[in-house]
Length: 112
Image 1 (cartoon, rainbow, N blue to C red):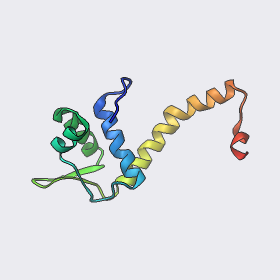
Image 2 (image 1 turned 60 degrees about the horizontal axis):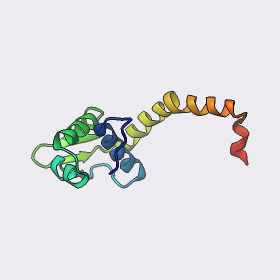
Image 3 (image 1 turned 180 degrees about the vertical axis):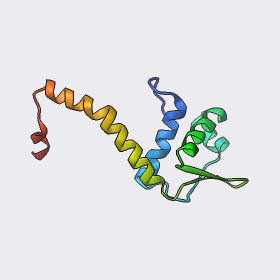
């Protein structure tokens, strides 16, 4: 996994797991790799991985079965969609809208 400098690594890992949920690669009740397994796979310290998993646990996207491992919540896809749609509308869309205005573009370009 390639990381960028503009966002903490643990958030990039959490985002990647969310992307895998949205794409259908991970489904409700699927087991995800352990902190150590996934950390070793992508070359990240287990503490960083734990921060990612903790974030997703707090958002109820993952759940933990003590002694068994971490799993995707049954309604994780809907939760991820909701959170990411809100973030897109709040953070990204205003930037796109402003850029379109500066370039003299309007929504009609999407109908071409």
